[in-house]
Length: 596
Image 1 (cartoon, helix red, strand yellow):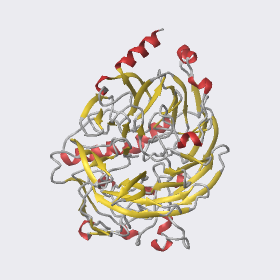
Image 2 (cartoon, rainbow, N blue to C red):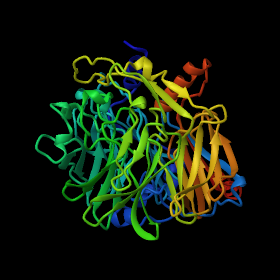
Image 3 (cartoon, rainbow, N blue to C red):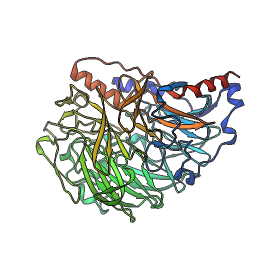
Image 4 (spheres, rainbow, N blue to C red):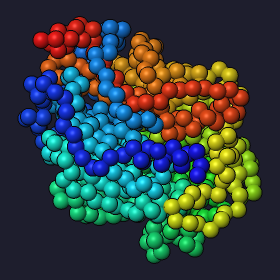
């Protein structure tokens, strides 16, 4: 058994039987916010209260923005830790604190959901789902729960959607949307609209066929399932040859964004599989695309493919952010996506659910696209930087992309769009002859050892690799950037206080920048590296900032590749801890209250 599988087996062996444990002692009983739990309606999801954080990026549009401004650019230097909570789990913690009127829900690796008092940190209940002992978790993480009505929803690693009673943590129902034994799994936060809980499946590296599934929020009944690869006879099926569509990947890792007026959700899709393009000739719709899905029916109403017949493992799984903007004097109902392929894509969403190309601007070094068609957005490739079976080449950005899954942010006050980026980073990769596919085993056609050591540094890498970029969408220009010495795996949070929060670096720092200028205003060294989405909420007049620390998964793998190439060893401690901050004056009041 490989070292990775031994660690995976150890994590699985530590899982417990499905159960909820109510804890917290006298303090929790005295001030338990679950007593009058406020059900989450679709109206609240469409117009979330400023004091709450009801879904993984804060709103349907995917802005990762809190309008709260008690903590602002003028006083953020007074930000101090007020409480913390250890999750008891290793590996990559990537979920935000989800907060509903003083009740917080966090999810962690190994299928755990924890309810906490969002003001005091008292644990209210804890749930952990049992998963099959044989299940090896390629990405042992979870990106957050969904809330609707009086339930909490988690997409579990075994491709099952779990509904929990928000007050008790007890299972209401469990619905499996795919068979984990065939390589399917889930890590994403559910998207909930029109009474449906929508989830997508990962597993493209196992030769699965991606899909998005909608489940009735109350009963757990499957309402519809839409595949991201068309079957023979369906629109787009001509872009797959032979039986390649059956194992073509196009995973859905990340919750979609949602236009409530249109009733349409927008999802990003992953790369085609296996990795080398000659193993699946054709454009390979709808891999590496944004797809528009009618939430009521599951019908695909439109799409835009960022790049066809992918050769670089450039998953485009982040959904586009819904932002209306002006382009060349025209008002655009926009979709904005910082692509793994290194381009910033601006698109237009139409009333009928279709999607039009508007523009694309390179935001990091990119040597693969020779040109982009100004009408369709279709790129033309440079064969010298396009790998294949028996053909090894170097290309930029690396297979980790100009930006991987960590979400961008948009601040309506500054009008700026923020990107967590990797610059000066390339890869060297080529394919080998494929062995026949075996269910539940990796099916990529690239040696694992090559993936873990294929990073190449471009000229300029001696200066920095990680960046946070701020873009003015109206002008189509970058207005500032903040540099980080090595990597940046930090999701972003921006606020009404003109702040931008981010972790993502191997120095374990959580930092606040001035959202207008990029100037660093505050930082805090956490117990571990931070790859989770931060969030902000308010209870009893106090604004909080919270983020889970916990290094692992792809950030740790990239660090290993850096160490192999640069011949050094970097240790980033693991261990999940939720860190919560407030202004010192409010922290003092909270301490006084807790002492009474």
